[in-house]
Length: 283
Ligand SMILES: C[C@@](CO)(OP(=O)(O)O)[C@H](O)COP(=O)(O)OP(=O)(O)OC[C@H]1O[C@@H](n2ccc(N)nc2=O)[C@H](O)[C@@H]1O
Ligand SMILES: Nc1ncnc2c1ncn2[C@@H]1O[C@H](COP(=O)(O)OP(=O)(O)O)[C@@H](O)[C@H]1O
Image (cartoon, rainbow, N blue to C red; front, side, top):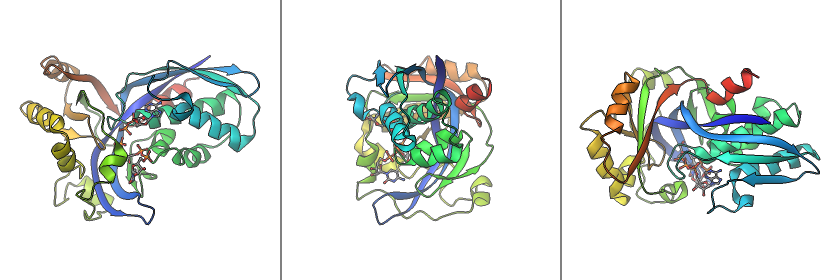
């Protein structure tokens, strides 16, 4: 049996610089992983059979990105092999932590290993992009400045602080936010060096989705207003998760312990190499 993590990602900043003809948005974002997420277990099954244990009840197995990733790999390689996959879900869905995309990436890497397919990381990332714009960064597993729809990656090494990650009890649809006419879509496109030196005119840690999400989801605005009393808060992706960085685990835990009722969260360490890649390298 192969047991592997599917870590969360944070968008340390995120701007939208335009839109493609197919409707997808052009982004500039900084992805970093944290050492907390879902866990997946894989064992071999005969005759191409695929099954998922403990998938979220509100997602049909065939709609789950885990099964979609496995089927895509089967179709691409014509393998006759199957798998039984068990999911331990810890990340909130629709939280901007990329849990579904991370589950898909872990599935692609795990089954490539288990089925001995020999596909390269680049080939798996290309397949993954068909499942979601966020999948390639999880397949490559290095902290990255991303452009395009989030798939053009440049490795970077931002500081690795402790993060407090919090969310109100809501789920936000990524497609819903990207479909809103009011969304900021014309941020200036900056060179990576300018981003890193903090010379963005609208602030180094900007997230263009935040003003709209705050307007549509007052719970997020309220939580950002609460966290700012302790540390500068940011939002990841299209929300609903918000986060702040701390020098120590203890400092982050102390704020978590004071979180208002109805708010969930965890403390995790930022990591520039994904826990998934680390776990695979140790095998
Ligand atoms: C916004 C980001 C930032 O990291 O994070 P999340 O908030 O979802 O975690 C991602 O780009 C999300 O990636 P992912 O969640 O894989 O999105 P997808 O499934 O590919 O797309 C969902 C929908 O969002 C819109 N979409 C997504 C990405 C993008 N660059 N432009 C878009 O317009 C499209 O309408 C698409 O139908
Ligand atoms: N294994 C999975 N885990 C989470 N969400 C999944 C999964 N498979 C499909 N989905 C769908 O993908 C959507 C986006 O999920 P997720 O990646 O967790 O959030 P976000 O894109 O906001 O970071 C969910 O609302 C759900 O409908």
